Structures are given as structure tokens and as C-alpha cells.
Length: 135
Image (cartoon, rainbow, N blue to C red; front, top):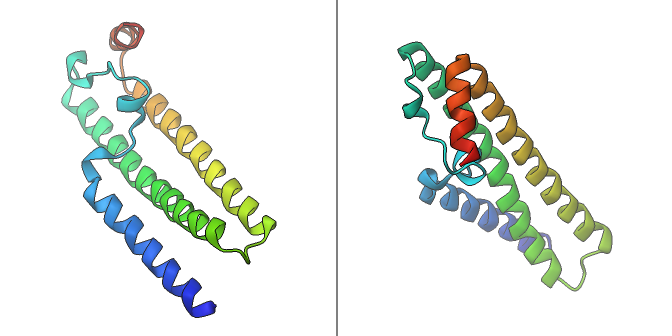
């Protein structure tokens, strides 16, 4: 039983890594998924602002890749656990809870990143950002 579990964990982990590498350009992005109308370049950003936003975007990509990787891994493990007649209710509930916690954490980190990006903007740029989001 331990060999099958270890084999499954390795396969699940590798599947998650492959998924992430195949979808590098499709990373869950708050700006794209939750607020589809944001085009940061239309805000007449200075070079310093562009640099700050780029740093924040790279930070977001790293954070979201890590959290998404864990979510994918746990979802694959949950599929396996649900099909295993010897799995306990506790094991299933713990996995489901960990998935929900990480999804909540991902949404929180997305909002934090957006708010940090917003602080880079000048008042007129913030107004234009608000107008883009409101459309």
C-alpha cells in the first residue's frame, strides 16, 4: 500500500509541475480574471512605476505558481483518496479543507498584489484605473 501511495504522490507532483510549466502564460491573475478591463500601460506610467509594477507582477507570478501547484497537487491526491475504499473521512476532509484554504489564500494574495500595484499610482492614474474597472 505504501508503494502505491508513494508512486501516486510522485505522479501527482510531476503532473502538477508539468501543468504549471505548460500554463506559464495562463497563470491565475487577479488583474486578468477578476478585473478584466485593466490595461496598465494606458495609465501613462513613468519608467519607475513600470519597474515597480513589474517587480510586483513577478512576485505575484511566483506566489500564484506556488499556491496553484499545491492546489493542483491536493486536488489530484483528493481524487485518488476518494477512489480508495480504505481512505478515512478525516483524510478526505483534511484534503478538502487544505484545498479551500489555499484557494482563499490565492484570492487574498491576488487582492494584496492588486492593492500594492494601486499604491504605485498617482491620484490621476488611480482615477483612470477606477474608470477602467467600472466599465
